[in-house]
Length: 146
Image (cartoon, rainbow, N blue to C red; front, side):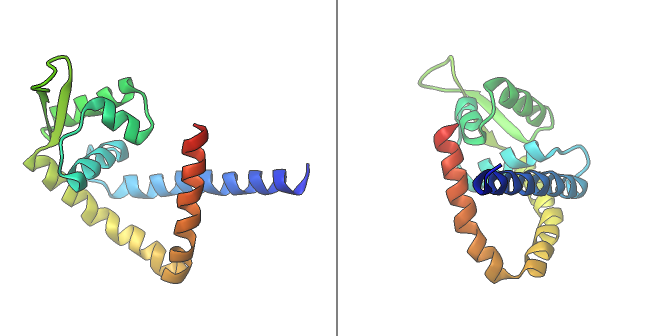
């Protein structure tokens, strides 16, 4: 195996393991019954402050519409989102975060922030700042080829 192949395998092995470990650690501090996918959608809706269609959310998270529908159904049952018909196209739906969803997002952030801040403190903010552009560029390359 040439050096670039070996480097590529090492890079993606580290990324995949870091992802697995981060998900496991974050899942432990989420409010009871909340999954990481639920938090991700609530965080997206809460930060954007705008309604999104299920298709827009599926595209943003790079998941199938079916997977997003499943997540949205669970969030709606929990009372964390409001789903309404699109007034311009009754075949489509629009999703917004509810006040209970904002509270759940805030509770999740209260558990997550200490965990991720500890990791940044241990690594050092200079290393994290230097790594972010590389990770963003990598994400962009993967989105281009996806």
